[in-house]
Image: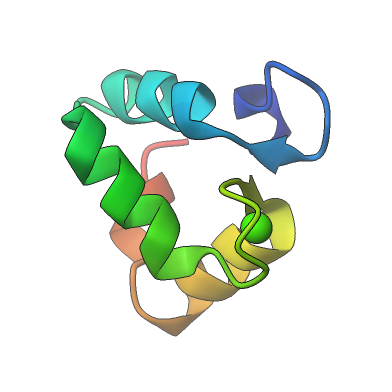
Length: 68
Ligand SMILES: [Ca+2]
């Protein structure tokens, strides 16, 4: 999923998540995106690290990154 990290900083920020969800065919509102980040963000930096998203995916939300 590194291809979604357009900033190449090792994490997915709000804008990158927005683009990612649009590409996955499930566009989210700004509020929806913030809630998604808040749900997964373990260190409260407002971004999703690959580790955080991977853990989330493994735990319960596999549908997030389906179709990759
Ligand atoms: Ca984080």
